[in-house]
Length: 163
Image (tube, rainbow, N blue to C red; front, side, top):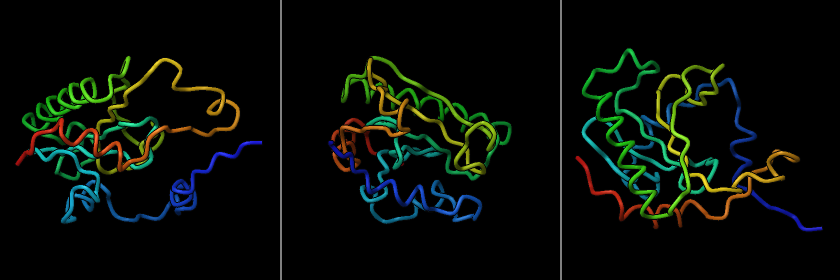
């Protein structure tokens, strides 16, 4: 029998589910090293970072700098930049990893699946035919073919340094 090891998932699985532990979209950009925080791009109103618990390699998140949980609390300029930067993510992923499709969207509120309820963010997930297989269906395990450091290395050149 072969074994699939995914030790990095333990931190996510064992983390308390109801305790507020800060906001990754506020805390991670404060770090001094974008590479350690997996931040790929900083724009005036938004930024792009790798999802550290991705559905697929290249799973990006675009978040506004402002800490808000609802779309109606964002000004028009931030909303426009959110979509423009999302488009840049699609272009970068098309060039860098050549996906066959994308899932793009956001989960607003815990019942909708939001892991970070108070800070909205857009998910950009590259997809390939057959990227979901029996492992996800039978055992609830996702097999990822690439580590975060390598994904960052591949994608970083496709984003120009923002503000």
